[in-house]
Amino acid sequence: MKVAWILFAGMFCANMGHSVLAPVLPPLMRELGLSALQGGLILTGSSIVWVIFCPWWGRRSDDLGRKRVIIIGLAGYGMGAVLFAIFVQAGLDGVIANATLVWLLLVGSRMLVGGMYAAAAPASQAYVADVSTGQQRTAAMGIVSASNGLGGMLGPALGALVVGLGMSMVAPILMSSLMPLVGMLLVWRLLPSIRSPLKRGERAPVLSVLDARLLPLMIIGFCAMLVPAVVQFTLGFLVQDRFGLDAIETATRTGLAVTVSGVALFFAQMVLVQYLHLPPLKLLRLGMPLVLGSLLLLVDVVSFTQVLLSMVLLGLGVGMAFPAYRSAVTFAVEPHEQGAAAGLASAIPGYSYIVGPALGTALYGLASFLPFLLTSVVIVAGIGVLFLHPRTRALQPAV
Image (cartoon, rainbow, N blue to C red; front, top):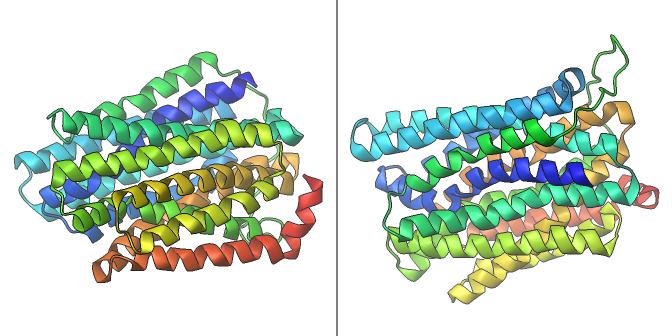
């Protein structure tokens, strides 16, 4: 499907800007005199804004058009990322000497990123739902979601490479801030406009997370997405402390680990999802146990090889679970509700990132195994809902 590849290209540009933070954020926080918890709260603030605005932007995509809302989201993301890089550099150079002020500025710039990028994700999901049906829809969701995998693979690799070559640790952030603007241009030039699903004068419907059709899927999505939210922003601290590395070595090794996870995620979405031809809930039943296995490997790390194996399992598991979750949501609602449902579905990763970075880094301060043990319990709960809830069991034959 051509439009899925256009959306893939646009969203990849933005996802690369997000994932580049994984290897450089933990050592950068320490260079700026900030704590691990403060680093986690930067992402938490962004995710709070994401959660608030995703449903709103999803409904606006019904009114304004999917393409226009995607363009607005990518442009705003790029602007916020540029500000984030500027504030980091100002803190490192001593232009802003107060660490608390630097932290507040970083929180504010990432909140801008979250609020604007919240437009692109639900509009993209609703666009796919508008132009596809059946297994074609699940495959298209896999292609669009694979932008996360490729961004997760190349973003950390870029960050680690640039830092390893002796450039400023801000350089990869500044470079990646330009990528969403490239994505915006691609979408503007290549993506066809489609008509609104609403009739003239009709208002976009408002859906609730508590909607009986959506609630079990939302719980499953939250449980699955909490894991990368915790792992991505505690892994750097685990690698640095467990193996006694300095900031540069930490960024390089963490970048490698996250890149491996991105490769596995990309493989799952571009190969497994495309060629297994399984309905969404069956993909979830394959993916979520793999996510659980990845967490159990991180509870007691004895070698860097073990870290890499964990990241492979995490990538494969999330790579199947995330597009399956997004696709399952589209099948649970009516055609005129796709924008509203996409807004809610896209907000769920935001809920995970509200809780995950701050909770993970806070628990890590108590004991290095606690973040991974707790998220293992959460994943077991999600698997229970997936297999036992009557709504998910009833949805399976319909898709």
